[in-house]
Length: 387
Image 1 (cartoon, rainbow, N blue to C red):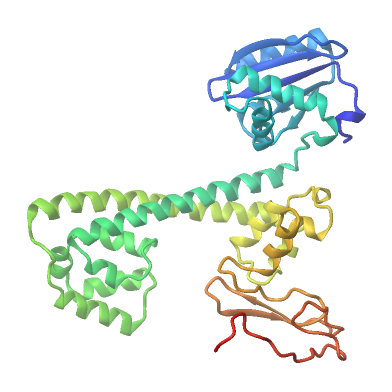
Image 2 (cartoon, rainbow, N blue to C red; image 1 turned 120 degrees about the vertical axis):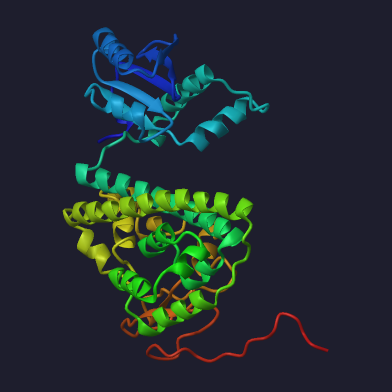
């Protein structure tokens, strides 16, 4: 689809969206007058406004707004006479600050500025082109799963904090707390007194039922339970904390169950996309990361202007600095195709070593070409001289 500068529209609309209302700035093609309006976020009112514009101006109508997805976008995409042009919110904010250094803003003005940007710089904005249903579903699924994982982390942190108040031994017995095993254990034995009253065979059956069959680990837990001393026996502390733990465990169990459902749905949807096998084969891309990578790249690969467009972004030397340095300032592993590359995990351990065909080494200040892929050793000088 061509950009705005190559199309003829009958009218142009700028929208500043909100949860309950949408401010609108309208300008007809070939006219300099602008009209302002405000409609509530109601399906019937949005439908009425859209059909009114179509009766008045016909088609097509260009619409500029600050987001590429959301309720108002979904509502307008069902009308084929609208062509949506997403504008980055930071772009609109800087455009506003250029004319209002005080940073004063209001919704009608933002709608007019969105329209002004679209009219004055049409070559800068491309129309919104929805991806396939499967890709859009996958994108929503991985985003919502990520939010559920964050909810689980927050619940786990609150649960650990509550256990530290009266039942810290449970944290020592289980290294992983965001598991069904941990939730079921606390549901059945929410206090130290309760678990100490349990029989040995009952605990063994519980661990075996939850696929925990490591004999040494089970024995160590049972010994620790028998030797455990309560942190406090004050009913004023134990009773409220016990109720709080049971409430948090119930919520965490629900979140973990929901994450499992999302994992199954993500695997089903991702398997229908043709490029999924490509991302599955990437080093370190497991069942969670591979669908996220596929959703991040999407189907419209033409928006990446070459391989550099899909990597670090920045201006000037910021791009090369980002590519060469990690967050702690250490040099990143080489990704030059002329030699072997080492991919490391987040903990710094070696994960995968990829062998590439030998070739001349690129001169980067650390090695020079002396033969078929052999770097020439060179003497390095410390940054500060010693006396």
